[in-house]
Image (cartoon, rainbow, N blue to C red):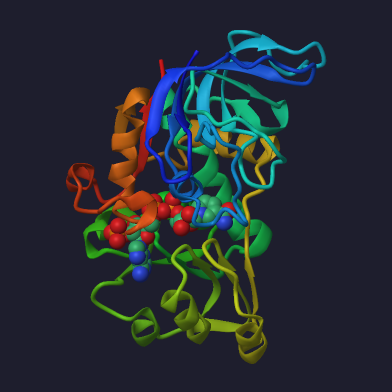
Length: 331
Ligand SMILES: NC(=O)c1ccc[n+]([C@@H]2O[C@H](COP(=O)([O-])OP(=O)(O)OC[C@H]3O[C@@H](n4cnc5c(N)ncnc54)[C@H](OP(=O)(O)O)[C@@H]3O)[C@@H](O)[C@H]2O)c1
């Protein structure tokens, strides 16, 4: 089969033939239709975080996909060949060693990480959903304990994870405040944010008049530090990019934790139903062909200066829309 691989840390992506995976009795072989690009792909490939995010080289990137079941192992009862599915790959950090990525024509996966593709979504849209939506779900409900009637501040609300967080929090009956670029205000209002603070123009802790129950921090750094000033006592700070200071949480009498996505078929199935009924929607910015993965990485690198040696001013960056996922069409 054809696949995109990284042969060495910081190296170029190559597109060529590799052996098609074989499946174990408890696995499913999926013919991949689309996969999506995550920051994590670039960070892992750069090698800058290899102590905590090691990869086996040569490495096939890609933590999420949509596709069609090609073959099932003898122990698999829940799916049959021909089923349209989507999900995360075994290569999501924490899923165990050696999982293959989805920048390829075929993938071996366990049923525990997949669900049926929502029928109203294209394969491109479906591939953009699993990582961002499950990160948002877990951040809000598992770690943030968000409840109806509470107020949440979401930093980076127009990003891939942030847009699901805004939609899911609003659907859960919370009041949603988001920080984002001013250009994304109308978009964020349209998906459920009641207030948008332009992070380039204002400091959220200076303009917020009331404290919030939960902060979902998708940015880190100074944004995280200043978040303690707007959290109610007993509130929760959930971070996705860096650990939360225990000294600060004690000082401000709040709880705080950095989460790590733990995908589940049950959670993805619930998200699939919300997508199918139109309660939440995906956001795809650009679709590239699989063999153009290197260009897609340049496109996303604008948000990650210095990673993988790419400059945000490259040709891809110029075309970047302000929000939405970058998807690779495989077949
Ligand atoms: N721990 C986990 O399990 C986990 C899982 C998934 C993702 N993540 C991480 O979570 C982060 C967010 O992921 P993503 O996929 O949602 O990223 P993304 O799609 O690139 O979104 C980032 C968003 O943040 C906005 N932004 C940048 N600086 C900001 C600031 N100071 N204040 C408010 N908004 C700001 C950007 O807007 P502009 O482009 O307009 O500036 C963009 O809309 C990434 O670092 C990712 O690696 C962690």
